[in-house]
Structure formats: structure tokens, C-alpha cells
Length: 256
Image (cartoon, rainbow, N blue to C red; front, top):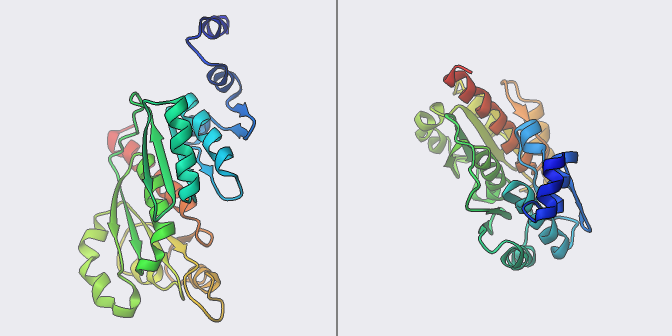
């Protein structure tokens, strides 16, 4: 501890970094950032933008970069992305910021940050183009956890020829995240065709009776094939689950 305090006094370590090392989290005006989550659970801590002001999100993203070398922001709109870029340009000018406007994921990293590199592949599949938002979130999280991510889009059950044409690629993945709205049939169909663990991601695309993802969620839960299911639009959770499976597969292949 003395060495850490001396490093703070010398200006080599910031108070936020020291707090994160001692307590596992860093506290700021916008809240507490769980800087130890990746080490503890293998899943990166993300800043959920929904329900926060752009300035709060940007402050937490800055703390994330300061304490871990990376920030992951989810459900970000243009105002949030702009705020994150502005604050990081001032606080961490050497950080690189990448944003996917479609999925609402913003990732910032310092030059010295090294992502995990897993010997495992995650396939992220969408039934339709409308399912791309939560699917993109899942893909981003699995990628940040170190998995190789393969996207297969717009292969829903309205035309089974599309998914049949993709079966060879899908069978070579280690785990699949399958996003579908409407009645949520695609994960069930795929689970009967491939020997790969499937995580069903119900999406709030649709209309009419139970059209906000409820029908998709119910259909996946009631599937007669073997699959796991996350909540409606829970792309982060689906990506994290896929990433954890990928970590175990990587460890097994490495003989660890």
C-alpha cells in the first residue's frame, strides 16, 4: 500500500487509479465505476447510457479509461457519443474512440490496452435487418472479451433457404447468438440443425399482439429444442454469455 501511496504522491498514479486498485471501484460525481469487473468475472464493465445524461456517461467513460485502459458505452446516441469524444479528447487525448451508430456501442482504448485474444469463435445471427441493434451490441461485447465474431445477417424463417445456405459457416462457430423478433422462431430452427450452443436473443421488432418482443421471448422460452434465452433486446447479456463460453473453450484448447 505504501508504494501505491507514494506513486500517488509522485503523480505517477491518479487517485482514481489508486481507489480502483484498493477498493475495486472508482467513485466520481456520476457514480461508481466497477474497475475490477473484468478481472473478477471476465466480462467488461460497460457504461449504460440510457437514463444518464451525456455528461454523466462521458465522466464515467473517462474514469473507465483512466482505471482500466478501456471504456465500453452501450445504448449511446449521437449526443452521448459527442460528449464522450469531447471529454476523452481533453482527459485522455491518446485514446482511440470507435463508435457504431447502429448498435449504439462506443469503445475507447488507450494505446497500451491489450484486448484478450481467444481461440474461439462466436457467430452472431439475425433473422432480419431490424434485429441488428441488439445483435450488434452482442457482437461488440463478445469481441471485446476476445472472441472472433462472425456476423450472419437476414436469414430468418420467412425463407429457410437463406439459413440453409449459411449452415456450413454456422456449424464452424463455437457458440451462436441468434437474434429474432416477431415470433422468435429462428433460434429454435437453428438449434435443430447445428450442434453448437445457442443463445436466443429476442428482439422488440414486430407489431400487433405481443409485438414488442413478448412473443419472441415466449416462443424461445417454449422452444422444443435445446437453447438458452436472454431478456428482450439484452444484447449485452447475450454477448457476455457467449464471451464466457468462448473463454472456457479457449482455456480447454490451450490445456489450461
